Length: 322
Image (cartoon, rainbow, N blue to C red; front, side, top):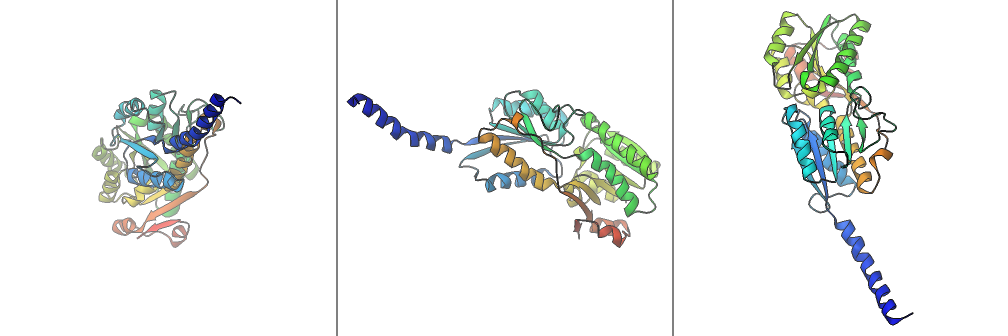
């Protein structure tokens, strides 16, 4: 071997570990888009912790760009575009409106969704098994669970005859799915359904609760993208039992929640981010469905409302907040 070739090979060999270290030291930038509801802090904490458990330490090998719409869904397109301009490595989108905004903003940056019913009904992906394009993640299956809340009110409160459902006009695609499931549950249980639509998490709420009072609703179920402390407080003020699919709604003072284990799925979303950062393509990663579901009841709220919840119902609960 010629001396010049030997030196070239030796120099290349010495450079390999340097290149490997450079690759390992790259700081991944993760954009996160969320509405800013009662579970916003839980999402941030659990998602961060999920990545930390996988070896990603903020400030060392990962950085976050969190963007909250603060309840204003019309802000989501611009926030999604901002994450694209920042050239983040992955966008994580929590709930259907955020997933749709992220999908509209980019076809190149991988998107990890944590959202309800992302298939044909909402148009986020064509199928769970073959999401295609740049999208993968977790389905929350929330629409079905909103309907289940109607059945749970029948079991919890024997006098339930009418249940109102508040849907979000700013999240119209998913609102239709919610209403379909609630009306199906109403037919199954014989409970009358009172549909009410508002323009957003902080819009027209006083009028909505006034309408429920006039309609003599016995309880109300809340679309997930409306699960805020403000609605929990209004329900308590009106002594109206309220339920949603989001555990954070109960933590904020709502009476009941039933749905997928949100904090567990926030952490699970971190695993999709890891796979993408390791080189996997989103279209090779089927969207997964939850396997753990949780019924939570806020006993303090029940006490303030003067509700006597049967012991047999409480025994079914996975979490009782006192």
